[in-house]
Image (cartoon, rainbow, N blue to C red; front, top):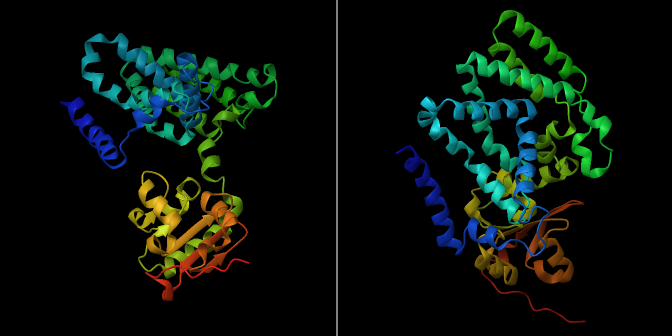
Length: 338
């Protein structure tokens, strides 16, 4: 029953996508990319890459405790049947590994869906003092050995994830201290929790050092420009549709607070997107473009493409166009060829 309830919304989602686009994630992944990633058809390497993503998302210490919980659940066969529904939490891992296997690379944040699985299975260790002690001892040992990795591995780009992070000295010392305290008290729960939290805040390896925050703040250098576009959109939006390249402007689209259905973008709406590129004044009242995206490049090829629009906001990296009132529903002005 639990598996059925879990599967219904998943099936409904993929069914909806298939009805509207004629394909699903599985169709796209199975075809692969013309230039696939290095994990293409390499199952072991795909799993290793996925584990590296999980380390970046949850940090190594919680992940090790979560893996310990998985091993513990398989060893407790009398409870395994009751715990089977928890394994559904690992389904995002199946999709992510499949994507890597078929040559597609995905962003770090996609692995956030696996964090509940890590937390749930790590918590199962609290049911057994012996299992928790073993998992905690193993984790402390690994944490104590991690500082040797930056010293042994060369500092070249493909090993940058093994570079030292701020907790390279503090976390191993703290782990050893917590182990001695837990050993003397014969109580491992509190110390395990402290070590997990410390492992997330003071990671030993560079790969664990807040990669999601780095990814989400990758546009900080143009935040002031982005704010100008957002402020104008929020204050002057009149309900007409907005044309954007979602590959570059998805964060701006969501941050605007305008319903997604009001946007015309190049994922899953190919018919509307192509029509908007050919006759933008008939489809969209607004155009937002970022330097280097598809719309920006189209304007470089055809400078008259936005002739029926007024330039509302212009910065070094963004342009916001608004359809002129006199041109709504009209036809393009006659072009002069010189």
